[in-house]
Image (cartoon, rainbow, N blue to C red):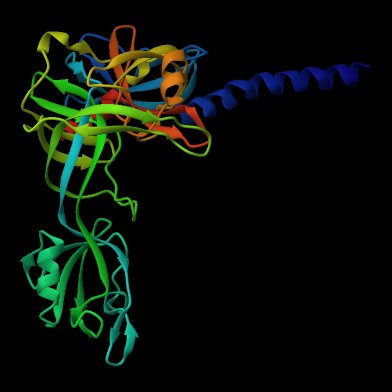
Length: 391
């Protein structure tokens, strides 16, 4: 009897000792290694269990501040970097905008065989080119359009291509071959030099004149690769309607470019969105403070989006999960607004960039829809998007 009782006490003690360790490991995978805090404030984390942030020592004046995150103020979770910053205020937008982009080079989107005197072949594929490659130069000359590349290839001269593959610059040698069908020299390449589309403006920064939109990159429709931006413009758009989304088939906004003068100039396309400078900015007095990731809570929020005409409207959502560690898919959101569900079925293509507001602060932007459930999708933290646009 005493032996059984002793075993139970030992097991209970082991369980109690393991619980904090397991919980600390859980939070270590959920909490970030880096947080922003306003000058004069300290880091406060919203979690189901109390987590304290105690200054790690020793620290020199030149080092960024580091804090030790602890469960119940006792059990260590991880060390995080704290970066002090001023209060940031941005104007939330929600208006649709048209995107016209010229690539920095031309993108390989596919290959085709040609009929040479020696039979069917594809010189480009044989040379080792791949879909998604960006051709920057031909024989040392910058390439700016598909038409320019076609004319160079038609000479039949050997080509030395400078390409970008991922983040690596490479050199590829390619010799065009005579094509019996078109009666000229060809490479077998399918290439693209520009793209266009519709998205949603997220914010305008009165302090810099810059704007951010989409919350995700503009990628090529065929290769899925992020398009390197050479130049582009943001144009006014009128939304004429929406194709309602349903499980397995995302919907989309339909619209048309509705003004001759551009809204602004596009300057950067990256994983966190599309950024540029605005020529017709909104009123600076409409700016709201932003919330840093640790200040965002689960529960009700609002998105600003335009699903008809040109003026954004507020729609209610729920934030159902928050991930401090993911690069861009930081929040999972669910549309609860009956009017939006009736009009669009939830989140549709073209709504990317719709600002998310909570408690009078700008907290992020809508980025993706769940293909199997259009009422749900992802959002990016506004601090992530803002910092990418400021680079």
